[in-house]
Length: 195
Ligand SMILES: Nc1ncnc2c1ncn2[C@@H]1O[C@H](COP(=O)(O)OP(=O)(O)OP(=O)(O)O)[C@@H](O)[C@H]1O
Ligand SMILES: Nc1nc2c(ncn2[C@@H]2O[C@H](COP(=O)(O)O)[C@@H](O)[C@H]2O)c(=O)[nH]1
Image (cartoon, rainbow, N blue to C red; front, top):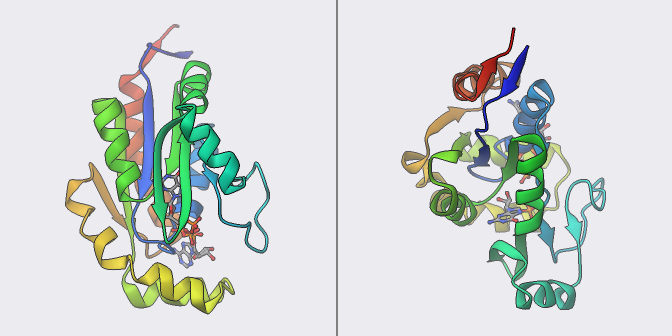
């Protein structure tokens, strides 16, 4: 039987919006039984998003109060909305599960690296601009939202070389397979055989 050897990992998915980070992260997370750390956000929920499952959707007032109380490990502003990860959520999940995953923009990924060093593994998931645009359109994402997100595309893409690993998400099953194999090497190092 394999048990955790006291090692903790934060798997940070980053890359341009619409590249498929969430789809990949959920499939890989399911394979390993990893916990997701959910962000607090001030933007309204989009069609199909579920509160406390996709994000914790809160008012700007509630967000600023949490920030004042020092609850956020990292906090960013994107296009006028605020996004943050609560320190207690990361610490509790790490203590409980050992390995957690998050989906963050480049500032968030960078902050996690600064805070957690070798424990933070940044997985850069990308696709070309035309593909991410098309995927969001297929998802019936609002055109204004697509246009706003595409404005961040080049800046997010430039973060690729800073990440520990990068994956072009062309075929979803293939990307999930590659990431699963990559993570196995880290996770095996954090496990001890008790048999
Ligand atoms: N390899 C793929 N081939 C085709 N479609 C894909 C692939 N990966 C993901 N998708 C689809 O692309 C859309 C965007 O994927 P997803 O939401 O996972 O991306 P994301 O990077 O997390 O972006 P967002 O921030 O918009 O959620 C979804 O409709 C998803 O089903
Ligand atoms: N640094 C952080 N980035 C976050 C967080 N939650 C989500 N995100 C990233 O923001 C953009 C926009 O998100 P959207 O849900 O409005 O499309 C996207 O790249 C997310 O991955 C967070 O807590 N911190």
